[in-house]
Length: 366
Image (cartoon, rainbow, N blue to C red; front, side):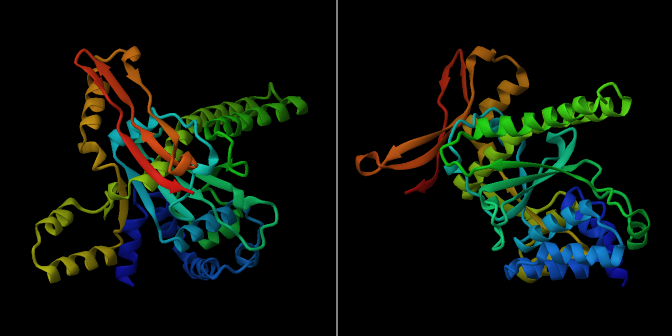
């Protein structure tokens, strides 16, 4: 029992939203396991099962909690995949255009989590989800969902008795969707329309109800506007990262997450004895530490990344000498009938000449 409590104390302070959520809601672990099994077995009643369980055990129709458990258990069923990106790759992808069609976008896993951390002032990370249900008759298999996790997500203690008393879940998610049902639609245009429409819908509702001048409405709209602007900035980055992950498998490296004590990771790096390393890793896992997938460590070592980092750090490169990265749907094969997506990295031009953008091939499309 002591080891379990020690593990929970470590994980509830984690830097990663899904790990904190599992620790804070550890009293729901049995239900998590049943829901996860239903998802893996592609049973149709998983969402209904979660709703019925909450209705029976918490005595309330807690939609926010159902949403949290639904996305979290799909995250579990997909293998607990968490991506964390290198800072210079973040900068490169943030200045890369998304003017390519939806047909180029494929998820590496059905459900996974991207850690945003220092890259966002409002959100800790985002779940990316394309869960295909056998009972889905509304075409949602052509929709990718993004659930943004707030900075304070799962940082407060909770309990079953508290949920029963309050009948609400304080850990909210901000959801957005990307409709990819039209394969030729340009990703950038869909993102822009989805995010900006959310604020204007809220504004129109308040205007129609005559509450625009209400103080609470003003605060709500201000919050909605700030979040929409932040998501508008992050959404292209997240989609660019998905494309990069698919193209650069050799730049996705599994390693211990940043919660892991540095002295432990140093011992692992220096350890030559296989059995000693296994014991160290086993101890870390039992203590509650885990591994994530780091993206961009190899990119950070390239000449292109070094020049970009220098330009951003010194500020000596004029904006007119800076060219944004982009993706290109390039013809190839016999009679150029096939297509493959290539990534043209951001280009720096200075007095020494032009640093050519690096072309990175994505998965071939027949």
